[in-house]
Length: 414
Image 1 (cartoon, rainbow, N blue to C red):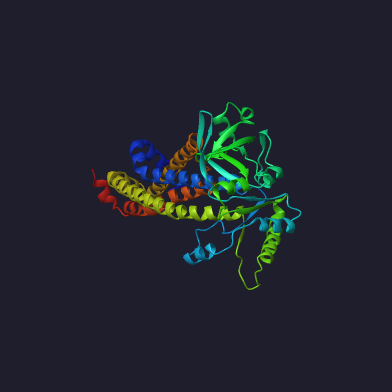
Image 2 (spheres, rainbow, N blue to C red):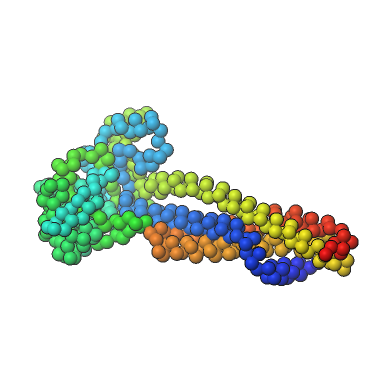
């Protein structure tokens, strides 16, 4: 039997029993759609962390000198105890790094993570959950903040410990009618009066988290209210990404000299860039990547067993048809090919429908929910391979059974 004839017969048989074919493929459709959707969400999150979130937290073309590394997930109890004994990052450290990196675009200190979350009150208006960060002026350059109204914090604010703040867009528009209206207004934070000096342009949000619900104040003012933080860091912004590796090496060398570390001693600080945050996130999502294939494989196996049972039932129902074909000259190979092709086409149809459903669902998630989703071609290819593979694996037995039917017995079947 020519291969194209086997395909034609398979499509004709599937079309004549469309409803049964659909329910036969339901397991594969659901499994493949689940695979495409979950991988799209994970890849979308990975891309967002890599392209946006790291820049929002660390800054673009930037790195940090920290007391502890960003990726603490792999740290042992002994590592945690060792980190606790490290000296705090100080203004002297920031000065040393500034001297070591005269070509840096900005070197800044910030109060560290997690920031205090406070209520800001302005007259009869208030907004809660505002993150307060103590900074030196260079931090605004590191983070690429754009001023929408008023002015940024400067060295005079820092030196004179002025009670002034620059707020994110959400804070200004929640408390006042506009960003311009917020300039010069006084607000209460932790029982103290502060004057709004500036408002930053919006940075947007992801997964429901806004990057505009914050307020920056001079670091000495912050420390007078909340004390010196154990997580204070120094951030360094270079003009080009290619300059970061060399700058990190120079910063590390300067810090080792300042901390009087011997050549045999390890660092009592960490120098991290955005890659560390991406690696940390990738470690978290790798757990999902390990679980998802297992769940999908279970669904594919169940769907394949259903296909095999339906094909065995189909062999029983078409016994007389098989007998007639054998009587007209069809050999075992022809019968085997006919049923195997039918099973593979069924599985591929399930894969295609599942991919389409998963793709549509992923697009709906990206459009109507805060979750970013990106469908990847490799997940589509794997889905098609799983569909075709299940058809071949679970179609061999029904096809072989049909091929072994005795033509005389088959012709007697009613």
